[in-house]
Image 1: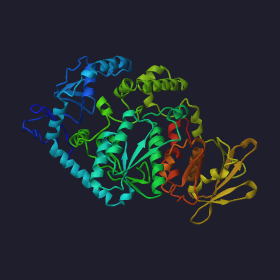
Image 2: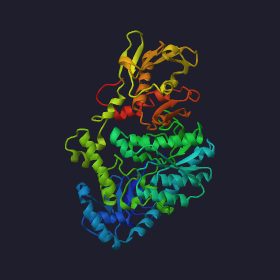
Image 3: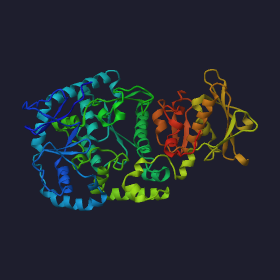
Image 4: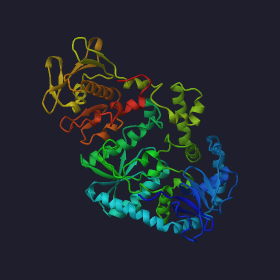
Length: 550
């Protein structure tokens, strides 16, 4: 790993220099340079005009060098310019939109092209160095896997653009697949860019992973809006569909997936293994994530794009720092403001849904809860009817020791076999006592019974199942895992999390019925292991309340 580099400013050349602190000399003119910021990005003419309008100074910086740090601070000719946070208020969006409409026809490139040329020239040696390292890493990673099992994960953002270009240049294989994870919540400009990307790169196979079974806004009404802590949206609309795409196209084969994640993006990502085969850390068990641009800064990403004259998502020109779902709960105040500015109909409709959610779940001061983004910090399912689905209710059986009667949320009379299949990870299903419709689960190593499952259709325990743990080995652990499967049965929303965990493609959820194939399941038990799935079901995290659950 190279020494961490930051941004210095050459006042003589009026350009940022990407360097470490041991080198304080400009690469162009040899003048002394000063520290500027940790990382930065270029401010395109469209965003520059927005900044000028917010500061009520139209075209004041048209001939200046305008950059922005990754922390949100702007720099004009190397000097810091702060935009007051209160200016990013959705109530200001209409007046700002009108001002943009007035001034945009008169806006021009100004000094931007000259600014970028100096930036490229000053950092050309640095670019060669980091690209050489990324290409070397990519080729080493590919050498360990068949090229037909190589996938380039593509989101339409700047990082995946650079990652894809480096990988395609490094391996030069027509067998590589570029897989776009369409969350159904992408910016319109992202969809436009995806189509251009396909046209510009005709020599690779383009595929799309998309969840066509769910509607995001309907799910919000059921399990609540997503938040920074309850990001069920990523599982359901991104990770899950990608995992299913892998299963459909690669069966149970390992997929080498190149992803444009960078260590500098967050403290969490900085701890990623660059080539990760650690099963407990992977979101999708079938893939080996690889990160070619892991050590790139944001300035490096833009240096690569601009030096190679790559097409990119035009949302960045408008001032968006990151491109993903347009209503992502990780978005900052500026992103929300930009949504009102450029996609007012979407932003307004989403606000109305947030206000309704706040009202329905008993929040106080609902406008403050919505407009100050307090909804993005919510945790659990408090106030939602659906939160009861993750509470496993059972009573001990009075006639059989180590047996519990579990309350089920839906009938199993016509789907008892499917219900029993959920216990396949414990062993092999076998017919038990026919008189009581019993199914037993046998340990596949010694053929000894592990579980007894009996449906209950009538009486006080109608719509229940009696499950007895028949083994003395790790009984408490087995009971906990049984509760996990009961929770899945009651709370399953076909979110896709289980698909991403199962490497044998044994789990199927069809028309709301969860099934595990007896023949395909390898009994790895990852789907009932809390290391891979806390609480046994993704909905446990999404809908849990302060009430203690087993």
